Image 1: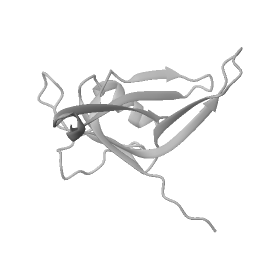
Image 2: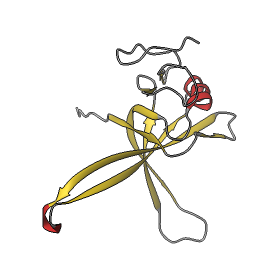
Image 3: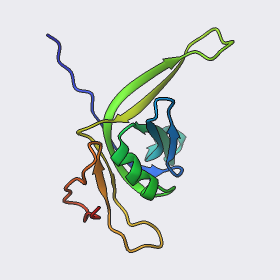
Image 4: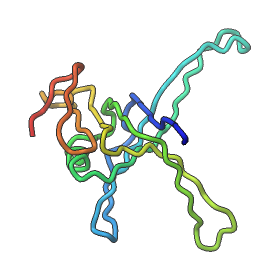
Length: 145
């Protein structure tokens, strides 16, 4: 018997509005690009402060979550995303080597939650788990659907 835990949590800013694509099967997929920032002091460079941004791709196939993201996932929003890591592998026509992409997959039991108000609006932070119903949160007030 094997055991494991595959869980990721990120807090960062959206680098672009959500992208929603329609699949040949009739379903939809939503893609988010989330930037996380960190800074440190480089003592070897005379104590210079170094800022580093890491970009993360977040994906979901959950209809209720996609509906919410289409309405609220706009560039610059502060977001908390929970999911699991998944690596896809594919090969483009005419290429000899495989390509890989590691993504954070938001599946039922995980969520995407906004931690700020939309710019120019009086809305509250919103959490939507991948299952489709609004989540309870201690950090933000919920928007009823």
